[in-house]
Image 1 (tube, helix red, strand yellow):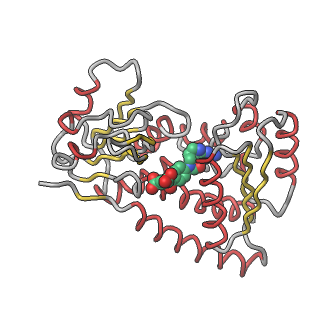
Image 2: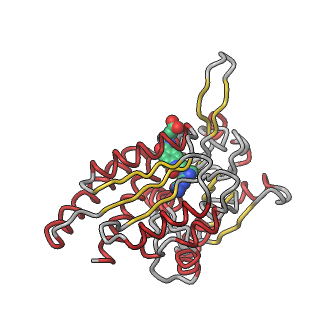
Length: 287
Ligand SMILES: Nc1nc2c(c(=O)[nH]1)N[C@@H](CN(C=O)c1ccc(C(=O)N[C@@H](CCC(=O)O)C(=O)O)cc1)CN2
């Protein structure tokens, strides 16, 4: 048996089309398209690509995208001043500061300076707290997209055994909160977890977000599990060419899983589609 491949690109395209319809509606009511401000500090090649792709997707959905590119040595104060300006700008419905930031900048301080109502990444402590206590919030894009893919594969998640591998504020923790809100029984594994293979073997849902290439072995999986691979790891193959691999060993997982996301083409496209959905949500709330 071979797992069903979860097509994140196709699901993301559907979500983007839904967002575009919502944008047209808000434009007809409010007379102005939602505006997203994206801040990029430095010239990290991957971040530059993500920011460019976000700009393209935002405009394709009918929204306004404004990119602010700052040099890698920009001071924290200057970045905080830009955030304050964007917070106060009525044409800006959503603000996103691309991560990672250079080491001399305190990312937590910058995120905390965002207006929570414009925090379309869902990283602000107010949004993180609301998610934890089950109140309406802007939810981080990657786990939001993962949940959509899981629900589409499995339907009702109530009582399902879920394992989230990784406890970052961007993916692991919000993912665990979202699955808990759907009444799944959630375990969070991390670098200190003993017997990771044993936890994986019990899980009907595995979300791998550790950033270690092919760490999760297919033989560990419970047969038929729904495997969501958040990892985007650049490795050099035996042929000397660079390629992307996830946190799950795809070749060994494919015959054992029930559903699996590929890398690329799984979770990644959902991240950007959910950013558009969050920007529309923020614009609606502000309208
Ligand atoms: N402020 C934020 N910073 C970062 C986030 C985020 O959600 N907000 N997430 C990641 C990067 N990221 C978006 O910013 C992102 C990563 C990957 C993809 C994607 O579509 N990946 C493709 C492969 C792309 C490639 O070839 O490199 C895929 O998986 O199919 C989109 C967005 C960290 N920073």
